[in-house]
Image (tube, rainbow, N blue to C red; front, side):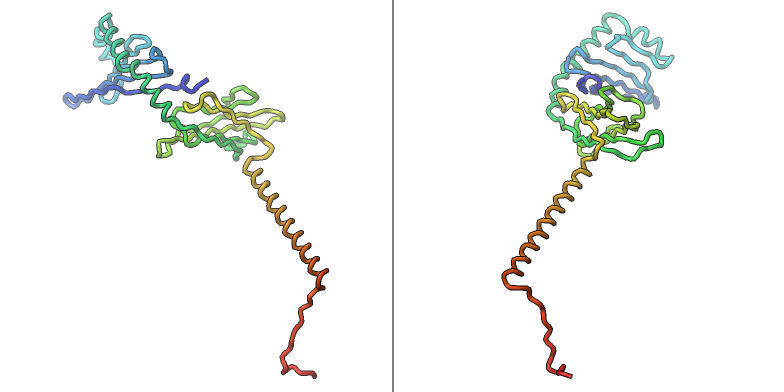
Length: 261
């Protein structure tokens, strides 16, 4: 499943402002894209008064929803009839459907694949003895989905995730924690879905030893091996010198003032 199937992109097309006797009002026309199909578009018209939503038209139901009582009489006449619906369909086609290739073309050209790090951390509480952290760094655009799987089944309990956090360079990061009780033979997976990925990526947790610790052990073993080689080479050189010319014993030369007693 692609991230495009559960995440939508909202495009604000038009905002009209007006101030009458201290009353501030505006309306917005929004397009919601959930796929590349031009017919799979949600078109919204929202009317606000003093930042409060008064009424909304939704192209999915082709109906208006009233949020204040005093707007009811207006919407009963303005949001009905073939002419009204025909105008809204034409606006959706003009402002939304025609922009689907542009929006998705831009996003797909500008995507940056996330860098994933999966590691063990200290648990938040004592309910479970272990906790994993799956982090996605440096991805663009913002919509992303990070989920946990245990033996292929999605886990929703004991999962805590942050929002997408801006890095300040148009990229984002996100972090997801899973508290759990380890079970022998189970497989825990962090699954990441993003615009930049043609299919979900799976990252399995290896409980034997974290990768940084394995790297430290490898580096330490290499250093120890080099030390043994240098020591062995020194001993061989020393033995050769001893066999060829004997062992040199250092002597001390006393000044003449220290004559025989």
